[in-house]
Length: 476
Image 1 (cartoon, rainbow, N blue to C red):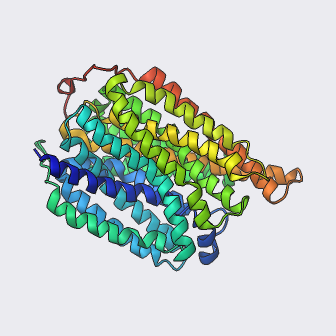
Image 2 (image 1 turned 135 degrees about the vertical axis):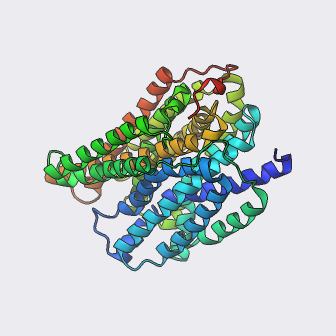
Image 3 (image 1 turned 180 degrees about the vertical axis):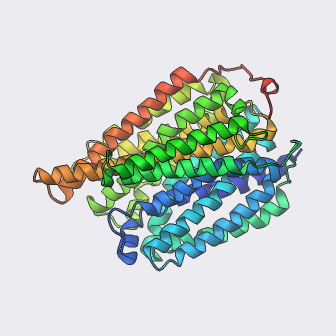
């Protein structure tokens, strides 16, 4: 057992690493106009600066989570952190749009090994109950607040040093985390009798998820009934079905389906998908609205999101204490409703809007909901999980986050583009056409997050004071 002081150090290190991973989902959003000009991105390809990272991150998370359980969490955490730092350095040196997109994908791949190892370290270091809830309160606050902080930091760096520093900043942080992790985090040892990683399963699920997201990204431009869209989406369905068949037959599957017998783990992941679909779209489209419609500079855009970080920090600590008293179901039901309210406020933003009247109220409500949701979901998704499956549970939760975000951004980007096209056909031009796109994208995103509350009402069953008997779960 790690002593109290070392537990604090462990939490600080893994939370800092997770902060950087989440931050990189959003830090480039503010810089997108500058990146587009410098590297000559087309309008259709610009979203790939965000999507390439998210796609590879989400696609490889199950692989990374299971590998952490089998081969050692500290080792994988350090290797992933170093790889992430190197990929960030190379991405910052990109000389073309294609080079940046590829290296953003490599960043996501490294993060897929780094992040689930970090969360499983937290789960195994802190005892289930109030102690772990407090630790996961910090973790959840970092996970939700990192996205908003990324916009602030991205604005400062983009305006004063250039967009490349949005990527370079990861290098000293990553090297520092890796250095101290080697000295403060104890290595885990698998209690399983095997170290078989199920490579066929890893390849099938990664290919299936990445094909699905790519198909959804391209379908709006191809046309949903175009043979290319049908081939991509159909191919994804075949790959994912083959993954399920492989897992049922494999002696040591990548994802033992017995883990889904923990009902709240399953429900928490289902709630996470639509929430991150709405959250990613909010940061992406709102940063475009603030810069393109309100004409804010990058640094002012970043500062516009600063209240989000503060509110999430406060609400995440509050809910980590409340969970021990009222359970995690009430926050999981209420939080998506707050996020939905914020998105509906954004869906009515006008061309002549102002920050205080049309942006800040929605941001404040959404931030409160995000702080509540990420902490309660993380606690629900990791409670009652056997230690030897902590990495897998962490990988599942992170997969839900990243795939939900990638799918949401893909779908809503298509809606945004289609709405602009339709508005232009009816005479709208410039900002007016963009506003039509923002309205439709935020309105559909609100349906996503509303569905999360409904899923929580139906799916989450764990009441306060009730403990899940993890030993009753079949361990594979």
